[in-house]
Length: 292
Length: 228
Ligand SMILES: Nc1ncnc2c1ncn2[C@@H]1O[C@H](COP(=O)(O)OP(=O)(O)OP(=O)(O)O)[C@@H](O)[C@H]1O
Ligand SMILES: [Mg+2]
View (tube, helix red, strand yellow):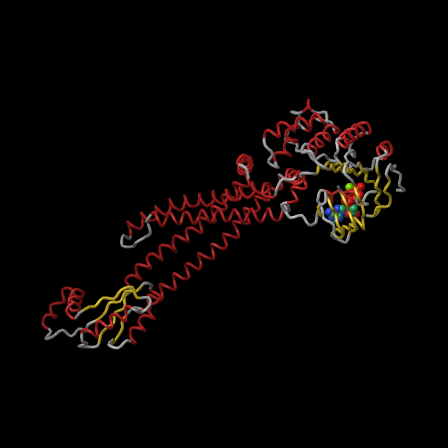
């Protein structure tokens, strides 16, 4: 399509956008996208918090007493080979005692009175993902030289479950918004098609191509979607900054997502979503009301 | 130019608009399609510009089977065919000039071509002096002339006219017929459906008469007469 044509047809789309039905559907799309993106932000943040938990989730594998050092190395290597294991660190008897001392704090004085160090050697295993904890723990326990394995499966399970539900709900809302917003957009485009049906009839008669006839409607749909999504992104972004400030004052220990790369990605995802909504919407109405 | 072989058209509801039409129209012909209301005239014309495709049988326009055209070939066919109707179908919010140039703009003709062809078409229909008028300021006959200018601005091979004089008084109707004759004399094939007995009888062109979807008469220099 020629550039000149493109300008002509874009002008048509923009003129139509200034009409009330377009403005209405931009606002409705915006409202839908605000709900969707708020859910998305909550989900992103809980995932972020979860991933920090997950980084903390460690399995501690205790070794049988008095294992020769080459056997210790062998067990360490075997653990490292288990899928889902990020890193393995050996904790000797002395370090274990120090750690206990730190945990006990002021009460640690009696440790000095122990006749000998009763603590076993162990491996600290950190995981790539929390939801593999069960498998890794089981696999580790199978190994020769391992006496016992400790971790907090309940907490991990619950967190993974919550995140799964949250993302599921977010996905369901996304699907609803996709359908609902697309229908709203298609309804608006339908009105434009109807208002211009005489022109369309003549265009078809004199041999305008389908793409020429469709272009302004598709463009109008995409612009509605983008404006709705863009407006929603701006509002949610501003609101989020406020929430972040508030959280950092009332609960400074809670870590929230603030890095601009991830938030920027979220904005881009929203804009794409809006464009897709517009594209689907204009497709529905032109397919149904613009038999070419 | 137009060849129809055993053409049937059945509309939803089992309405048989055409029932086995055979028709050949040569290049440069002037053909009247006559027949009572509902006999299938408009349906037959719409097959020429592919407003409809036959349910059965074949329609060839300029050698191409209209039912076998691919989707991007349909607009190209329509660029070679001008169509006018009883109700003119002008865009009320555009001037005479813009109504005609619209036909070229939407097929992405160059501005140079548009500037050349639109005044030509307007002077051909005798409306060069009304280029900037709005359609509502024009008389019915003048509006039909604008529609004709729009139909011929791209030099079509065929001009399809569905009751073009239906809304006009007898004198104005004859003026329009003069214009269509001029266009025909320049080599454009004209196919026109009409109820206007005077026109058909005075012009003595080829007459194809339809009745209940069938061709019942096809005369070289015919008259209108049919038993209504
Ligand atoms: N789109 C359509 N859907 C269903 N039936 C149709 C359609 N178009 C035409 N018909 C029917 O097909 C038959 C032929 O119609 P057509 O318009 O071709 O007749 P016509 O000869 O042009 O009539 P008129 O002189 O009134 O214009 C009629 O019975 C009409 O009701
Ligand atoms: Mg008719």
